[in-house]
Image 1 (cartoon, rainbow, N blue to C red):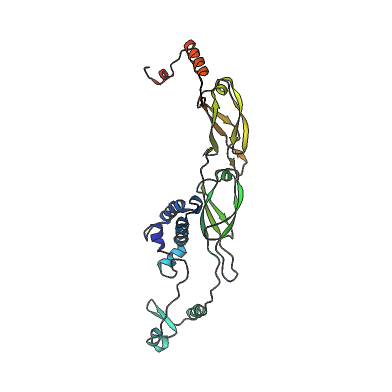
Image 2 (image 1 turned 120 degrees about the vertical axis):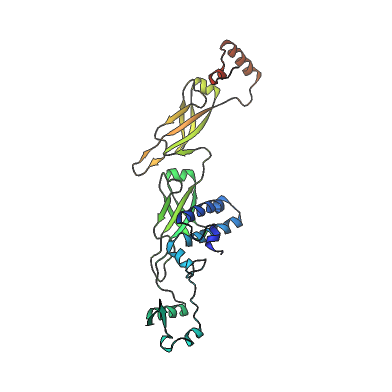
Length: 304
């Protein structure tokens, strides 16, 4: 993998906010769910996720900058050479000097070297794992449970609360990186990206939608089926409805945890002219307009 700073396109002195912003932009552009079948996007997303895992963790970032871990987050073996010991003072061949002070024999360093040489790892708790998760609009507003496999192969059990918002981060306790030698795993942090819906738009806890109706339904009034986030319902279109008139469906919006109260749904009426008007309809409208002359353009300040 390339240098994580280069992968995310940030400088060595970038703030955590700059790193988070760069990661979110790149992850959204390359996420496999938004680029189905694109192997290059999937490869790039894994690189971005690995780079973010290092730079978003202050401790890992510090250790990477110091050269203690490599760009995959793995420990770098300490390279100690025979000449280093052979040319050292006889009384210092098994110790280290630091900050100009003679500390003599350091048992902790010796044991650390022995563990590295034997391939053993010290006990350590698991680290946090961070993910970007695209979620369907209806799953976000209604809540659900998802068991999903992330691009790095990790399987997460995600409980999605009703009313989830864009950019909200879910903490999944114990679903992060595994610890070593039986230590507890870390937590997983899942940032939510809500996918747009073809019909619904959210504003706060309210839902906005459009309902197409015919000229006859607008003139005479009607009960028509319309969609809500809970499913289809009967919507009463008032007699004499105008184009773009908005109807309010109370308590058909987003649930507001933890109170259980809900927002409303606002339905904008769109009057749709007939797809294939015939001569009979044209003649009727001409006769009706002759008896009921009107100039809709006059309301908008137009002369004709």
